[in-house]
Amino acid sequence: MRRWATDTFYASLAYIVASLLTFEVLTPLQNMFFPEYPSRASLLFLPHGVRVLAAWLLGWRAVFALLPGVFIVFALLGGSDVFLPSRLMAIVIAVTTVPAVFYICKWVGWDLFPRPDRKPCWACVMAVGIITSFLVSGLTNIAFGSARAEYVAFLIGDISGLFFLMLALYFAFRIADQRG
Image 1 (cartoon, one colour):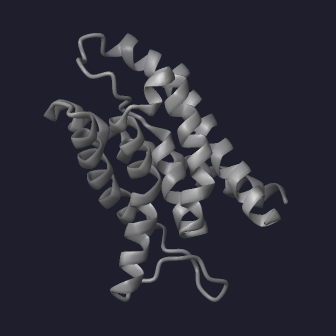
Image 2 (tube, one colour):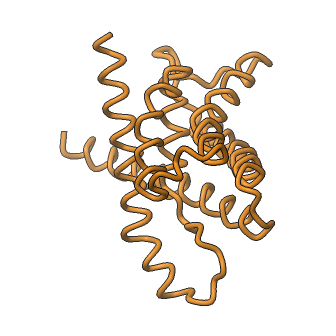
């Protein structure tokens, strides 16, 4: 039970921090540089990277570990609208899609989950992240009834957010290795 609590605390905290960074820093910068951009979606959505890494590390436990953080972010952004069926569906999509794709990959013989006897395949994790970007963007837009431009914006944001989060972690771990 302690492990679940720890996983939930860190995964949800990472999701909330990535969301705050996205919506409080990156989106205002995006609006300064692209004021004519019609979508409210972030073109650099870091929380998708958190979803992918949590699902890769935790498997199905990521669903429960991310759920509080995803709910809090939806509540911060939408207030009491978080309880609308479309928002609840979007929350379910956000927390279940990535673990489901990792398990489908495993089921078809492409087990990407971390193991001590092999190095991680970062390109493979990124590929799953891209696949899930298409799924999450499409399903979320269906849940919200959004226009096609929103789908493209979500897709760009998810993929670029995953890429830049993984790139930042790569450099952070390299710096940590050099100092340690």
